[in-house]
Length: 457
Image 1: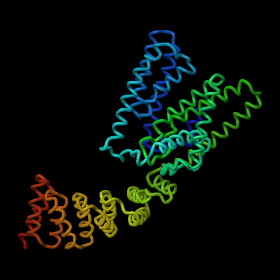
Image 2 (image 1 turned 135 degrees about the vertical axis):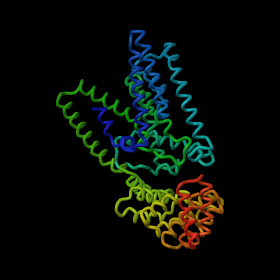
Image 3 (image 1 turned 90 degrees about the horizontal axis):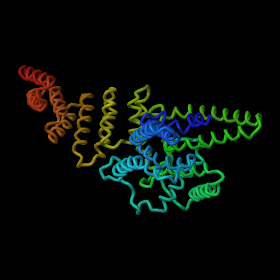
Image 4 (image 1 turned 90 degrees about the vertical axis):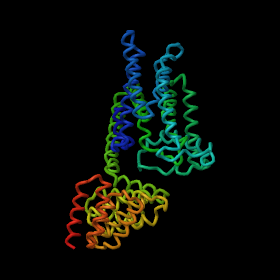
């Protein structure tokens, strides 16, 4: 029942329903297999079987770490297990057997941090201490640590993105409350260390598993639902332990009532998870849901333009109308506008493509010649499809002057000249096209047609 509560909890929805986050599930699978094998290794009497289980644990620990860096936390969890419930700490070989796990973890985290701190990374570089101070980082870490304590108990108003940590002001009450909650649970676990050693083991595991999610090198940071995927198992352990102890000490009637209440809660959680999956159904629902959650945040315009592109890619009834409204109001970055314009061209809407290409040309950097060429070529096609060949020719000519080997623009220029009955000029363009395309059959066909028309004229 405790495992089922974890499985159907709405906080699991993001990992299960969003394909790109399935790495969390894969890593956790290997993580759990490694723990099970380690527990068998620690309790097995046979030397041969012990070596087998140790090897299995090490193998799956490596697979967990390679699947996602959170899997590299395995060595710390094994040490906690040695403390409680295995109570193996104090023997020299217990420390030595962790060295291979520690080496794997160190390698994975060094590669992860190296990629994160690299100036060539695909994401923004980490903030400096001047941009995001130590006190702010500590406040953010305390908030994360406290958030995943209470959030599983109140899984309502879940969203793809949360705004709370977009700006961290340590003096705000929420961070004082987080500090009080973390400090209180820490003190309680220390006070109960002899009476309830399992509690301190769970609490230390909670903090350890969330350490990579505290955003020490990220600002703004988001307390995403997926970060509770591994940590959430601790709640299941606590729930399962509580139910087992209740079964031993309570009357049969009380046990039935509690189990009935737990079953009802699990059903409600499952219903909430089912509803939550609609948010992750496709890119359109994801961006629509994110926009609703963010309000007037600074990244809202970017999300609107992404929503517009998502409408174009889905291509259902009225999607092109919705996409045009989004992209007209919230233009895409120039480098991303060309695919949107071509989507409208493919749907026989050159007028709307014209608007997209022209707006992007207004915003593009003067030094970004390749993006300019792509946009000029698209705008030329949208003009040509409306019969405005003279203006289209100007844009194609700009492209081939900037990039003489731009085969697509050269082909479009030649066809535009053909449409204007300027066959001899078209012949020259198609000759160049045949040369730069290494004798492409379509280029040769265009050239032969132009030669025939030029001969007739």
